[in-house]
Length: 363
Image (cartoon, rainbow, N blue to C red; front, top):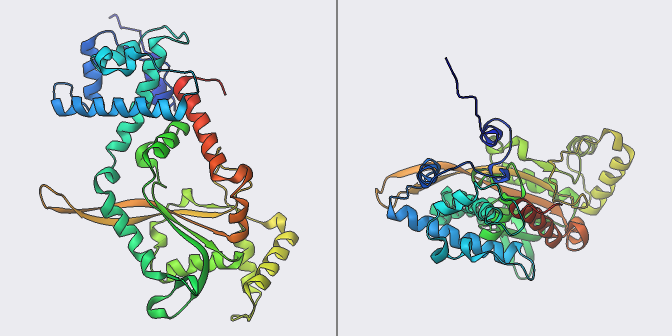
């Protein structure tokens, strides 16, 4: 019995080789019928007018993104792939992406580039957040608004229910709403292991405290006031490069239960212990190739159960949605405003990597 021994290596690299699909150098489609079938398996039926319209909208968004976010002065995308009138049909992109021509100005290169960005945009457009963004943000941010008190005289404070319990002064409190689409696209393109449903920090909150000790008080406050449930935290997404938990707890156990000390005094004790016992320090660093090691912070990803009503059926359903909680003290916040740890530098590193993956530039 004879067997067909021809296997496409690109397919197996994607299925079980651990390679992200946007790093595939080419497709292996030979006809328009194959291209149409490929798109249907992906999720878009080109015989359905609504699906065709969605694809053209995604194509337009991808062209705009490449032009505004990735291209440098003097560069341009060939009209054969960017202008719908000349491209004629989306399957033509897939067929050009199957060519073996990898020269600098080939339609193969630019078709692959557009398909990579279109893939990411499609993932984002079909995420739950795209349909229920208002409901998700309301469910997640409502508990924080309940406890964060902004007063023009006394400033920002995290205050316990009915004004009792802990009252923690804050230097800043930021609600990070839905990450803008350019930012989300860049992040998904830059990180090979990211997909839309794995984009866990699309929204979030950030606390900036006056001192290091209050960073830990904020975490305790969020749990004791049931803003955050430890059961909903995603353990492998936590990050602590600010101060090791084991040394913090050691210091707390060695002090009286109610120590009459100012935050600055407690910070001094904490820093002295860290200097003394650095060999025992247990930081938790989740590696991010774009984050500067100068940026020191605490971060965890938790989930909120969101209940929504389907607009057509009026049936209610629920799902967990992730968001980020980030906490740092004012000293480290100020350090993050300039230099390698700044947000602008972080974004520049992400864009450079996204350009490399989309256009095939060498690092």
